[in-house]
Structure formats: C-alpha cells, structure tokens
Image 1: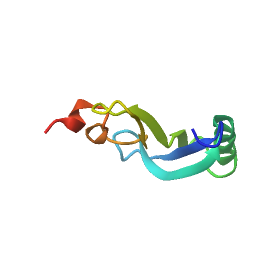
Image 2: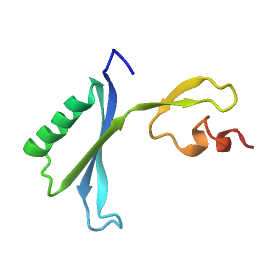
Image 3: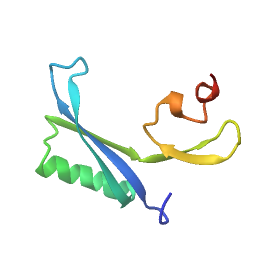
Length: 97
C-alpha cells in the first residue's frame, strides 16, 4: 500500500458487444492514483450515472499492484496485478526452463 490506506487502482470498463463470444469488449483501462476502495466505488457510481449507462457498460477495478513472494529468494515483491502466470516469480512456471 502507498500513502497509508491509499493505493493505485486499475479500472476496466467493458462495453456490451454481441459480436464477441463473451458479449462484451474491453473499452477502457485507466489507473487511478492514491485512492481508497470507497472512493473508487463512488467513482464507478458517478461514471455510470453521467457517462457510461449500466445497460451498456460494466466497470470493475482492482489494485494495480499485488505483493507476491519470490519462490527462490523468499522476499516479498510487488508485481502488476495483471501479470501473466509465466512472468510471476512466485510460480514454478517462471523458474522452469
């Protein structure tokens, strides 16, 4: 965490798209700096109210970084939340050749 209870969050906005198998597509990705979870939830509600109607858009947010334990050294390190498993030093996949 950064600055007490504040941290950076990544918000993903998905738009309804029936041409896709999932029924939606990624519309926007934004990093919000120095926020807490309550302020992010308020932001989602405001965005739905004024810019992105719930009938056409879905929003989710998560911390931008996550802490994992390096499998070889045992040290805690921060990596981006959306790091693929093969690039995550806390997995055996990362360390295997």
